[in-house]
Length: 92
Image 1: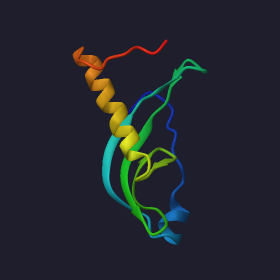
Image 2: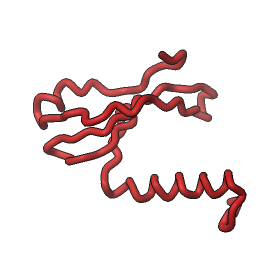
Image 3: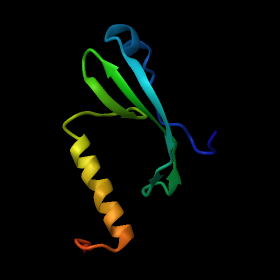
Image 4: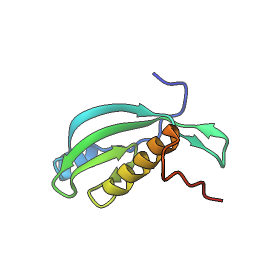
Protein backbone atom coordinates (compact mmCIF):
# COMPACT_ATOMS: atom_id res chain seq x y z
CA UNK A 1 0.00 0.00 0.00
CA UNK A 2 0.97 3.63 -0.18
CA UNK A 3 2.16 6.11 2.40
CA UNK A 4 -0.03 8.90 1.02
CA UNK A 5 -3.65 9.77 1.89
CA UNK A 6 -6.29 8.10 -0.27
CA UNK A 7 -8.60 10.35 -2.30
CA UNK A 8 -11.63 8.35 -3.42
CA UNK A 9 -15.41 8.38 -3.30
CA UNK A 10 -17.93 6.13 -1.59
CA UNK A 11 -19.49 4.33 -4.53
CA UNK A 12 -22.03 2.27 -2.54
CA UNK A 13 -24.99 4.32 -3.84
CA UNK A 14 -23.76 4.20 -7.44
CA UNK A 15 -23.27 0.45 -7.18
CA UNK A 16 -26.92 0.05 -6.23
CA UNK A 17 -28.61 2.87 -8.18
CA UNK A 18 -26.92 2.74 -11.59
CA UNK A 19 -25.45 -0.75 -11.58
CA UNK A 20 -21.85 0.40 -11.25
CA UNK A 21 -19.43 -2.44 -11.92
CA UNK A 22 -15.65 -2.34 -11.82
CA UNK A 23 -14.43 -3.95 -15.03
CA UNK A 24 -10.73 -3.72 -14.12
CA UNK A 25 -8.70 -2.48 -11.18
CA UNK A 26 -5.81 -0.53 -12.71
CA UNK A 27 -3.69 0.09 -9.62
CA UNK A 28 -2.99 3.52 -8.15
CA UNK A 29 -1.23 6.73 -9.08
CA UNK A 30 0.31 9.14 -6.60
CA UNK A 31 0.05 12.67 -7.98
CA UNK A 32 1.59 15.65 -6.23
CA UNK A 33 -0.57 18.64 -5.27
CA UNK A 34 1.52 21.78 -5.75
CA UNK A 35 -0.71 23.97 -3.57
CA UNK A 36 -0.18 21.81 -0.50
CA UNK A 37 3.25 20.41 -1.40
CA UNK A 38 1.93 16.91 -0.73
CA UNK A 39 1.03 13.71 -2.52
CA UNK A 40 -2.19 11.70 -2.59
CA UNK A 41 -3.16 8.23 -3.73
CA UNK A 42 -5.77 7.90 -6.48
CA UNK A 43 -7.05 4.42 -7.32
CA UNK A 44 -7.60 3.83 -11.03
CA UNK A 45 -10.46 1.67 -12.29
CA UNK A 46 -12.19 0.88 -15.56
CA UNK A 47 -15.90 1.08 -14.71
CA UNK A 48 -19.25 0.58 -16.39
CA UNK A 49 -22.56 1.92 -15.14
CA UNK A 50 -25.98 2.62 -16.66
CA UNK A 51 -25.64 6.38 -16.21
CA UNK A 52 -22.21 6.99 -17.73
CA UNK A 53 -21.40 3.86 -19.69
CA UNK A 54 -17.77 2.84 -19.81
CA UNK A 55 -15.35 5.25 -18.15
CA UNK A 56 -12.14 5.50 -16.15
CA UNK A 57 -12.26 6.48 -12.50
CA UNK A 58 -9.30 8.24 -10.93
CA UNK A 59 -10.38 8.24 -7.30
CA UNK A 60 -13.56 10.35 -7.17
CA UNK A 61 -13.10 11.64 -10.74
CA UNK A 62 -14.74 10.03 -13.79
CA UNK A 63 -13.13 10.36 -17.21
CA UNK A 64 -15.51 9.49 -20.02
CA UNK A 65 -15.35 9.20 -23.80
CA UNK A 66 -15.21 12.99 -24.26
CA UNK A 67 -12.00 13.27 -22.25
CA UNK A 68 -10.17 10.06 -23.19
CA UNK A 69 -8.76 11.56 -26.45
CA UNK A 70 -7.42 14.56 -24.49
CA UNK A 71 -5.79 12.29 -21.93
CA UNK A 72 -4.35 10.13 -24.72
CA UNK A 73 -2.89 13.24 -26.41
CA UNK A 74 -1.37 14.47 -23.13
CA UNK A 75 0.35 11.11 -22.66
CA UNK A 76 1.53 11.14 -26.29
CA UNK A 77 3.06 14.59 -25.78
CA UNK A 78 4.70 13.40 -22.56
CA UNK A 79 6.20 10.42 -24.40
CA UNK A 80 7.47 12.66 -27.21
CA UNK A 81 9.05 15.05 -24.73
CA UNK A 82 10.84 12.18 -22.98
CA UNK A 83 12.19 10.96 -26.30
CA UNK A 84 13.36 14.44 -27.28
CA UNK A 85 11.47 13.92 -30.51
CA UNK A 86 10.10 16.40 -33.01
CA UNK A 87 7.19 18.50 -31.95
CA UNK A 88 8.57 19.21 -28.49
CA UNK A 89 7.75 22.77 -27.65
CA UNK A 90 8.12 24.15 -24.18
CA UNK A 91 5.31 26.44 -23.10
CA UNK A 92 6.49 29.57 -21.32
